[in-house]
Length: 305
Image 1: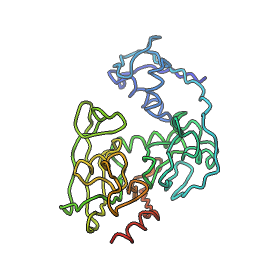
Image 2 (image 1 turned 90 degrees about the vertical axis):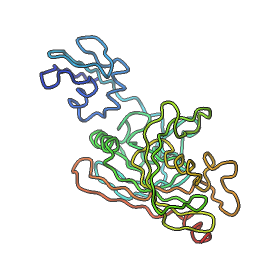
Image 3 (image 1 turned 120 degrees about the vertical axis):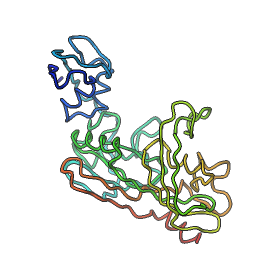
Image 4 (image 1 turned 180 degrees about the vertical axis):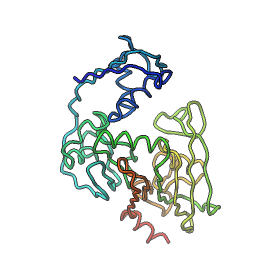
């Protein structure tokens, strides 16, 4: 177990405890530090304090960093479509049908299982449950996922996502003819009031969410869209498009009673994370990654012109 000690100086006085620790221990992600605070691994003058506690001049802060738990996920030799890799991070093109990290009912065959085989030292980066995972895609959404290979990269990427410094683009096929060539959906997203597995617009505990869209192609009964989400709420794009009465084709959760009505049929939601732009988490060199439409969406496009 590692032990850290700090004394609050004038420049850190009145700062939040979690902010103070984040600035003092830049190699540990803020989310992990918050968890350590919640688990009483941090004391201020020998007393446990909440993350929002305002520091005072001269106070002594101690952190007992417990050893990393053994990850309850096995390494699996699953092929990965790697778009980019260096010693700090990976960009992977995730196929539809693959869960990002282990969870009840999905203990194997996940992206994390594949990453543990590919990366020798990934275990524990960013926490035990989701090593290296900075953001996620839904199981049935294909496309680009960024993976951190060090705590420094994990923390930097998390900050970039939080500060909206990463440009994200998605491609989607939606039901109906979208009227305007471009537009924005600016509606808060939160847990659905009655259906706990779903998200919805409005309601209590909703958070601001904005998605911009551009029509790429209009067909008889569907539209091909490019989407640029400003925020990254759970199911944001799917919820926003459904709120416009243009749900993603094949979306079993938000596509209504018949997500594959008529001839518009796909085995999964027609949503693909196609492009990411960011500065490298360590060197700050500009990076740009793209992933072409997967074969199932290409086939749909060819057969439904």
